[in-house]
Structures are given as structure tokens and as C-alpha cells.
Image (cartoon, rainbow, N blue to C red; front, side):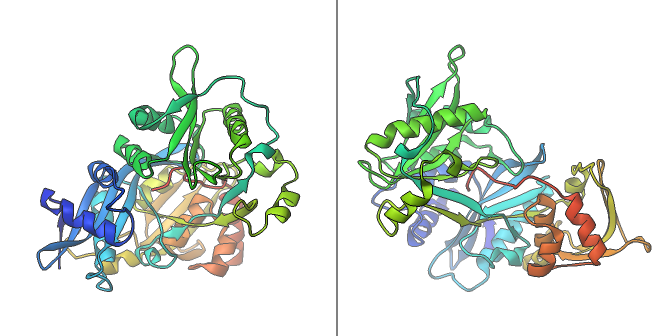
Length: 409
């Protein structure tokens, strides 16, 4: 097995692997793979002269409590049918992380196919995302007064810029290459966008992109809804309501800080009536993305939490080292540290004898640091242990809004 950089000659072989795992249909692919290949840095796993596995990496940033931190987006890990169970995917992903960390990326993120595999590389699971399915005619918002603009593939660059300029909240991700958005638009022929422009500048300020399961009556899946002010989100909901004469169901991810059920008529009754039907009204939750810290020093230095100061010794384990060859400069972030979390946080190597010790994995520590779960909860379900008083102090210190990527990859 050889792990190396992607070459142009690998294009058809890696595309074949994407087809084998069902990511693209060879009969329907209209440039999806090409768009993602152009947007990514790619590492390849070669077996017997053929590219049988790959990792696609995309640059971006993640909002940490108002501070954008450089992000390594693991946008695609694929292994062919002949390369399974050889730890090839884990090794390529680890090497891609090492290379990106050496280039200054602070955090790595990905969408997981199942919980457990990427934990072996130090990733920790994010919070539950809430998905609501409802009849758009039941929205308690005013109909739109303005006429929306149609959006399509020709508007890919404008749509991408609109996504990057959306209202930024804790945990939000931006992916930099515009080909990422172009690939999203290409995934389904029936996908479409509607939105609104600023009346003076004509800039696209808020919009949504929809992928219908069935064009006539739905369900309509809102892949993203982009807005810069909450009133613009309400206007987008009004636009969805306008579609309710024909569309029976909309599926949408609930934005942070908004409880969509407040804006629905009789949600419980509608759920009972539609139960087990094609257009079932329901509310479900899914934790499907993971993050991990790549550069501990930069992440702690950019942690500004002035409400409560806590100092502790950190004994950090990082399992990624088991997948990395010795020649890689970055070998994970395992070690012993002294950490102070405050308005201006600090980290130093080594222990200070007078301080309590927090023993944890990088995945569990990342979850606490991001505000996914409190330390006391992670001590029950994840790899985190420490004195009870320290766990309580950490609970009161990492009081952060729920992190939400708001941009899948």
C-alpha cells in the first residue's frame, strides 16, 4: 500500500470508488465529482498500482465564540470494495490531518457515517441537530410581500458568497472554495433556490436551496437557509408558506436560537394525524458531525471566557498517533499541560503540582471546549475524568451556545 498525493491519472479510479460506495450515480452524475475534486486537496491510497482509497480535504474556518479558527474540513473519505479492513482509510485520514495541522489548521471536522470509527483518530461527536418536518401551510408567518428571485447553477458563485456572509454563530463553519457550493447544487437535477436581494446593491442577502424528493407535492428538503438577520429568516419561512398550496411537507434543520414549533399551527395534532404517512409531521434529532482540535495552543489562546477562571493540569491522550508514520512532523497533541481558562486563556507544557488533574481524550476535550456537553456529563459517557470540584468548575466556565456547523461537508 502506498499513500501519496492525488495525480490527474487517478481521476477515473477515484470516481469509480465514489460510484462503488453510492456517493454518485454514473447515470446521473453531471459534474458533482469533478466539482469536489477541483475544490479539494486529495490524498490517495494505492494498492497494486490502482487508487483504491482517498481523502478529500477542504479549507475553511469555524466560529469559536466569535473567533474564526482555521479549519481542516475532511470532505470525503472513500475506500473501494477491494481495500476494506486494511486500516487504509484511517491512515490516509491521519496523514491528511498531520499535513493540514503543519500548515496551520487549528481544528478538523467531518460528517460521520457511523459513530466510533473517527473516534479512533481523536474526533468527538457534536450535539444533536433538530430536523422538523411540517406542512408549510401551517406556518404562522405572514406571506411574502416581495417577489423572490430564482436561483440556479448559473448563480453558484453568488450563492457561495451569500453562504459565507450569513449570520455567524458559535460553531458555524465556512468552506472557502466556491466549487464546494457548485458541487452541492449539482447533486440533484430538480434542486432549486429562491431568495431575495438588497434593493439598492442587488446583492443576494438571504436564500434557501431545496432538493425535492418529489417535485409536485414534496417532501421538499431545505439543504440550507441563509440569512444575515432573523427577520430575513422569517421572510424565507413566508416564502415556504407560499409554496404550501401545492407542497405538503418541508424538511428543515432548525437554526440555533429559534424553536420552529413556536411558528407552527397545532404541531401535536398534525403529528398525530399524519403519523406513519408519507407526509408525516415530526421532529427528530441527529448527531452526525464530529470535530477535534489539531493545534491545542492556538485553540486555548483563542478561548476568551471571562465569566469564571479555572486552572488545571491536563493529561491529554490522542489516539491518532497509532495511525501516523514516524516521519510526519505532527504526531497529535497528546501530552501534559497546565491550562488556565479565563478572559485571556493560557496553556503551558508540563504540570503544576498544586493544581487538580483532568485526564481526557482529545475527542472528549474538544467536545467540552466547543460546548457540546459539560465536563460532568462527559465524565459519565466519554473519556474524561477529574475531581468533582474541577468538573463543576469546568461546567460553569464553558457556558457556550450550542455549536452548529450550519454547513455540511
